Every structure is written in C-alpha cells, then in structure tokens.
Length: 50
Image (cartoon, rainbow, N blue to C red; front, side):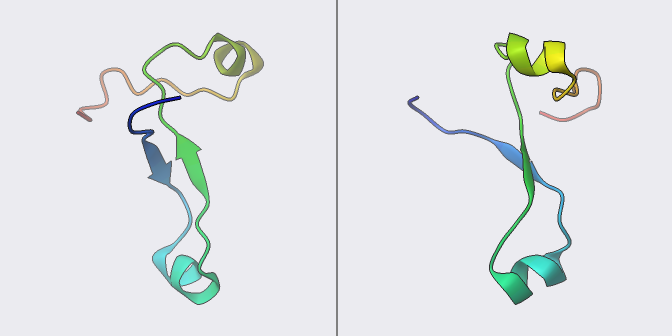
C-alpha cells in the first residue's frame, strides 16, 4: 500500500503519553468491503470531516 493511511485516535492523550501507545481506528475511502460487511467500518460520510 502506498501513500498516507489515515486513522482516528480513540485512546485518551494521557494513556498515549504514559504507555507510548495509541488505540486507533483506520479511516477508509470506501474500498473496505470486508470491514464494512463484518461491521468494523463506520461511515463518516456527512459527518463534516474533510
């Protein structure tokens, strides 16, 4: 996979700093049929994010 891969950090900043670890959710442009079909993809369409 080439290019940037975007994600949303869902763990609190204090946790990330303390353990040098972050929990993230990948953001997909819509080419993730397996994730969508299994319930692991949440659409952000219309959420105001760009």
